[in-house]
Length: 248
Ligand code: V0D
Image (tube, rainbow, N blue to C red):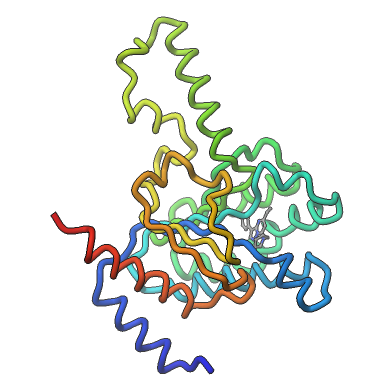
């Protein structure tokens, strides 16, 4: 039984260590969570949204600057239409329910991925959330939507090739920074901690270029069960590894 004393103690432990600047999370296991309970998959997604709220509450007052959540991959379109339709309503629901809290906590919303491929009502909800929070200076909360790491790199290659063809860029002079300026994350530092829930030990086309030096943390906990305590444990593990390998 997890109590608030243990939570406070874990929080105290991580407070004294070096915080990751950017945490990225693959929120896996919503369907499995629902299946275990004989519920429809969408019930798992709804609970998954609650887990996001717990993480935001848990990060309050911690010095984490960026949180990137993998909410919808380019492969997720293959799911049943009814499930995709349900998912496409979640951004609007989340913003409707949470905007007050988001504003109170100075959180700035952002999105990475090919947003142009999302339904108009989803894009509208997201644009409103981004607009409302554009002057906030606290945690940057990024949702990866219609995101694929290979697609991101592919469109960067195309953009750079076009510049070369126009004679604006010399292929042998292309730098890491030229490539980075073509990625969705151009104004976001690379994650230093990537968390994947639900027991799969894979990256599954999430941030590919950006994870070159990230610590990877895998847990069997299903995303709808993920709590502040799980988040703090992941951060504590990050700090232990960083103490061992981070030194000069
Ligand atoms: C389902 C678990 C929040 C993972 C969390 C469209 C899968 C709940 C958003 C959201 C999803 C997105 C953009 C935004 C605000 C909120 C979300 C999707 C799925 C896919 F600006 N949760 N969430 N988006 N799930």
